[in-house]
Structure formats: C-alpha cells, structure tokens
Amino acid sequence: MNIQLIALDIDGTLTNDQKQITPATQDALLSVQENGTRLVLASARPLHGLLEFAELLQLKKYHGILMAYNGGKIIDAASEAILSETHMSIEVTRKLLRFLETLPVTVILDDGTQFYVTDPSGHKVEYECHCNRMSCTQVDNLADFLNFAPVKLLLSVDPSLLFEVQKTIALHLPPDLTVVRTAPFYLEIIPISINKGKGLSDICDRLEIPLSASAAFGDSENDIPMLKAAGWGVAMGNAEDAVKEAADTVTITNNKDGIAIALKEESQI
Image (tube, rainbow, N blue to C red; front, side):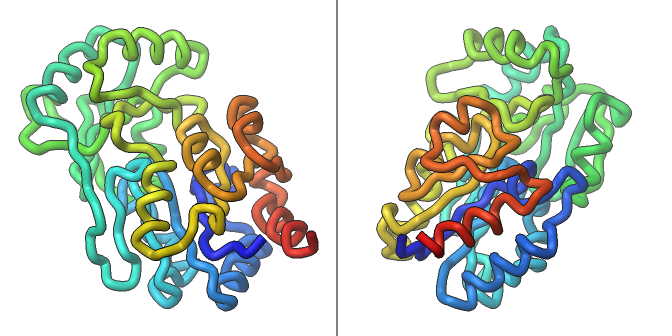
C-alpha cells in the first residue's frame, strides 16, 4: 500500500497500559513521517489530552492533525487552526444531565480547558484528569452549572453495568445524539454527526489524500467508523471483538508494539 496518512486512536492503541508510547512505536511513527506520511491523533479525549503525544511524535514539525472528541474538534497541529468543531446545545445537554442523575454513572463535563464534576472522588474522575493533564472543579449540580455548549458528555460506569446503561441511555436520546463506548468503563454522548470515520474522511478531503491511501488503528467501539473508512483498518490485539471484525487486519496488542509491528509487516508486503 501507498499509505499517505495514518490515523491513530490513543488509549489502548498508541499507548500501552501505562499510558506511554513505547520506544519502538515512537520510532516507527517518526520514521513514516520522515518519509512523508501524515499522522492524525484521533481520540475521544479533549484536545488538551492529545498535546503530550503530539509533541512526542513531533506533529507540529511534520504537519500532523489532531482529532479530539471523536472528531468533534479537529486542529492543524502546525498552525493550531481549528479546522472544524461541533457542539451539543445547552438546552438539550441540561435535560440530559437531569436524566443522568437517575442512572448509576459519574458524569465528567469539560469545556476544553478543565473538567467539572459533582464528586471529585467519583468513579474514574481522578484518572481522567490525570490522563488529560487537566484540572477538575467541583460544582453542586452540573445541570444548574452548565453555561456553555459542550462537545460531549463523558460518563464513567461500572464495567459490569456498561452495556445495560448504554442501552438505557440510547433509548432516551434525541435522534441527533448517540452514545458510544470508548473504554471498558466509559460511555460518551455525542452528536450523531460526529464520528472518527467522518473526521478521517474530512481530513483526507482537506489534504487531498484518497481515503484508500489512509490507514487507521483502534481498539474500541468508537474506532469502528474510522477503521471502516480507512483504506487499511487495523485493530489492536487487545481490541473488542466487534472492532476486530470491522478491521482489515488484527495486529498484536498495544503493550507489544502492535502499531510498529503492523507497519513493518505492511512495508514488506
């Protein structure tokens, strides 16, 4: 394949279980950029949570792209220009926050610069703040507090309840919103117009790169549209079964340099 662009999920894909890019993976991705391939970091994370990895992979130098919020916000890493951005309405979000108060979830709201929660010790709150290098502010009630239009709502859930809660929320949502799994303990409510596949397609159009010349790596449900859209979709060995079924190739796990191994094998085909 003549791969001109590679889109990479971060958690469980680009990083190992310690949230680090392994040396072999970093070297492989720097090498492909030196040879002219563009990189896209494609994550459910807020933009701030992508910056550390953008710096490690020198995306500014190599004119990479940052796709945050599953494609809800897309940034040119070199110029820092916003290429696209999509939001939920304040009114609809406020109603959803009232509904979510009745469910066994911890809601983590963000405005792009910091997180807002009702319980700083809630499930996965500290974890999320640490991973994204963002501060957390406690408020009495998220629905009452809301004064901005968010891109998404992040929900941390007991893994044993994840699928059940996802189904309950899906039945409650208006037709322009959807709920997706982004980790074994995370659900995200986002506009249905947002997904990593559309984000990848839009980026390729802007860069005048054929989708057939793109590759994508992922491990979770929210990565499926991106793997299907790419010319070469690669699921990690640690991916959900549905992700593996949607991919063209399954590599080894994120802890064993799955990205680097797949790129090496592809170059030898």
